[in-house]
Amino acid sequence: MGKNKVIIIGGGASGIMAAITAARLGQKVILLERKDRIGKKILATGNGRCNISNRFIEERRFHSDSLNLYNQIYPQFDLNKTLEFFEELGIPILELEEGKLYPYSLQAASVLNVLLYELERQKVQVLCNEDVIRVETGQRVVVHTKKNKYYGDYVILACGGKSTPDLGSNGSGFQIAKDLGMKLIEPYPSLIQLESDYAYLKHLKGTKVMAKVALVVDEIPVKSVYGELLFTDYGLSGPPILDISRAAAHAIKTHKKNIEIHGDLVPLLDRAALDQMLLKRIDRMSYKVLEDFFVGLLPKQMIIPLIKDCGMNPRDKGAQITSKQREMIVNWLKALRLSITGTRQWNQSQVTAGGVDCHEVDGTTLTCVKHPKIILCGEILDMDGDCGGFNLQWAWSSGYVAGVSAGKE
Ligand SMILES: Cc1cc2nc3c(=O)[nH]c(=O)nc-3n(C[C@H](O)[C@H](O)[C@H](O)COP(=O)(O)OP(=O)(O)OC[C@H]3O[C@@H](n4cnc5c(N)ncnc54)[C@H](O)[C@@H]3O)c2cc1C
Image (cartoon, rainbow, N blue to C red; front, side):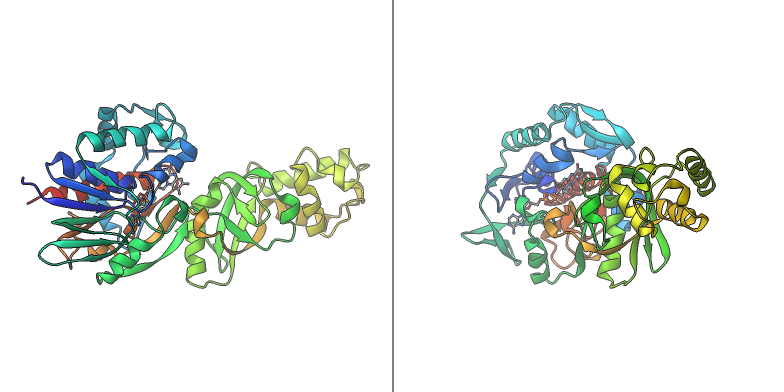
């Protein structure tokens, strides 16, 4: 293999992986980054611990209009190769809950540090504060930044999506791809908190409860997840909400009107057992006012919303709960309906759903079909994963394939 000049646009996980791979294959690599340093997002991953991948990588954890691309790319640099790559660089892996894999140090900074070291060792030229605005194709490829022009044999677009623009990916990669004639699947935020107009949010703010959370669109159940639900003043957060958020954001994007979260706030009790428990409590605590009656069963902040939604008075006594009200209480606890009005903004989202249509790239090399000197990888493509290390795995796998493609004659 000879010395191609490879220009990589974007110093995130996928661009860094592409740069190391192409350089190891003997190419001369320049990495252009719009921020003042590369890898800012890596530092923020996994709450600063970097959930590098997941033991259980499976197709169903990825989402795209063209999932076939995942099936062609992932096997070329799968989990084993990823772990080997990081272990060679000095990162032993620690497995925590649900197969989530982290650096043994539990520090994202150590992942970035070993990558920086390897970039230097492979003599990749990293140029920061270089905001790319346009790419021209021809005999050679010309990359225009706000300040300079760079000429190369191959360009890798690794600009990420639109999520958390403060960390660098501001959607400008989509514009560059669009200007080159590539089709976009309209991007929308994923792994993001949801907004609701539920009347008692201020009251519930900060309350956490282990719940089974279901997304229901136009009365049809779409997805259901168990986990710690967090109420906020704008709506809902917590791991189950992030898991459901892609489907909710898609429903919002496609203008569905009736989007609800149904929360089963006592998932360990079925309706009959809950009703029995209520009857027993009424028997034992008939003398208590309702404000005190539910203490011990529910977090305190939930008691007033429950009482009011069920048309009761906080000063009423346990003995006054009617059978109709008992039915309402069971309904409230087993299927609290919260209408969803939107998602939070891009700066809260962890990943971008949609992006450059995967049909724009060759399925095995990630080379742009219209421009054979341009290669795409990472989140800029219409491919995103669930929470839990799947998005970084896509960045590592696709970055590797892009680097190999740019390393070919
Ligand atoms: C807070 C947070 C936590 C996360 N935690 C995890 C986790 O633990 N595990 C996991 O798997 N995933 C996680 N993700 C998702 C994961 O980080 C991303 O999917 C992945 O980093 C995407 O890599 P990328 O290289 O494609 O894009 P990015 O990481 O977004 O990198 C793109 C780079 O390109 C640069 N750039 C963009 N446009 C231009 C331009 N025009 N010119 C020059 N440079 C440009 C950007 O500044 C950026 O450095 C998290 C995301 C966030 C926001």
